[in-house]
Length: 415
Image (cartoon, rainbow, N blue to C red; front, top):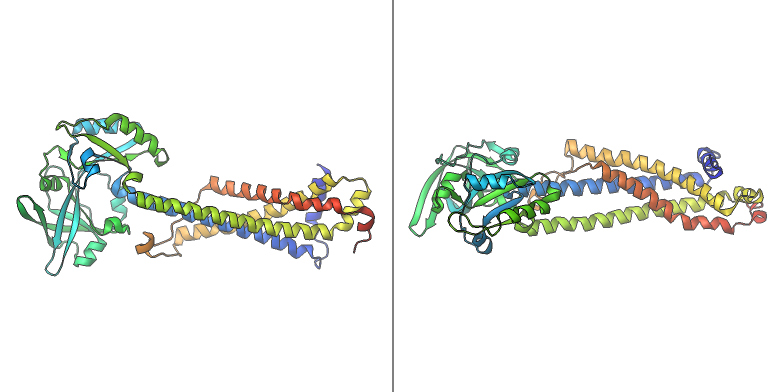
């Protein structure tokens, strides 16, 4: 064991006189590091949880990649493309794609005796991944959506149900306007969902793919497009490039040009907003590191002043300034490590408390979620611990040079 490490352990384990100024200084420095790390862990956990929750909500409705008609992407009109078995197989075989599902959009009006509302009917088929929808159902059930026949059943959002005073099992008329006039349809409310994403909840109803295709006047093998779910969202751009190479600018059997776009391109306003959260995280991390560093610098200077006599004796015995500085840096590392342990306990504890109890609630109209979402990421927590330790030690190098100005003869008379 090196001499600086040995001396640092002895100083750290020495309880000594509790009236010493260094004892509360050490406690304050430890608490400062602990608070800083705990705040950083909670901040990162909340931001990660929030970003991933919103991302999954948007992907639940819009998928990760959409394959549509090139004309539909460049205009407000809904131009169909042919998504037959051959195209479905081709899309499913693309590297990185986990699932392929068809959809068709139709514009209509829901009308009750007292009110009416313009909505979008999203037709989905039997291959549609219902995981997200099942997680967000608040009443009723999801019907077995078909691409062969119409069941005249729809699933509406809670926002729509509240506005039109709809309940499950209730009959409601829908009106569709096209070149041939107005076509009425009567649907049964099969279920009610709630995602708290107003972008979708205010206007989207779910029905059979067959119904939406017929309402739009498409051919049986046509639809508005296909939604692709990827295996790894972090490799979305790579998978998107594979899709572009395989299908973009190709022609379907009706000579319609096919194109694709990612969820980031389809809903840029949402993901741009989420990216702004990263700026807040970096600001908070910087402030918390500054808090830990300032408390450690103050504590180290107090400890050096209180140990002036010891420093003078060590110099008189031949110890070099470098060796003494390393002693106090080791001592600071012990204090920081204790603060990191306390910070981990408090920070992770708060995150787990929120994760299992949802004690902190939010306004879903503003934040899209009713409870603050959190996500523990062990590699990031370890990185925060390592970063805080290294930065705190680094900022103490300059204050530790104060030791070189202590004169042995004068310091041994220091009181």
